[in-house]
Length: 134
Image (cartoon, rainbow, N blue to C red; front, side):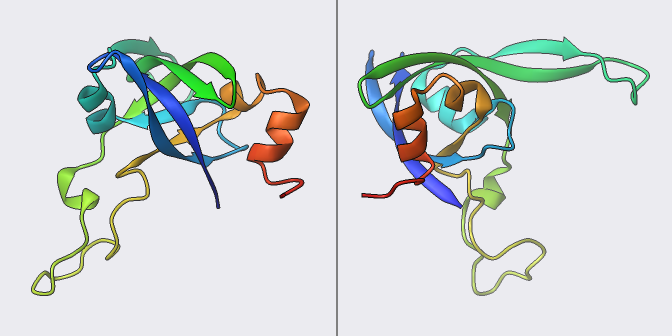
């Protein structure tokens, strides 16, 4: 798993803040957890989508993110996911384990998908993917 840092614009503080991100070349879109988007003051909106496998439309939560990586600014659409509060912490010693013992990987992170990675220069993409580590 490749983890990198990017900066994300947080309307709540009117500035960019650093966030850890999982770099996922298999993800079409970026993903941000709902609790992080809400904390940063990022507007979340609903978008119905139609899938041929499903009779009725599904409604996804989406957000427009302003990201900064190195000296570049990038605007990307992100899918917003809800992670239940109990998955955002480690299990307690007295708790019967019905889920992974460690917190969800997106408790404090987002996912950088191809809609972000494809905007990077060849050099920036190689760096974030650790193709030529320094």
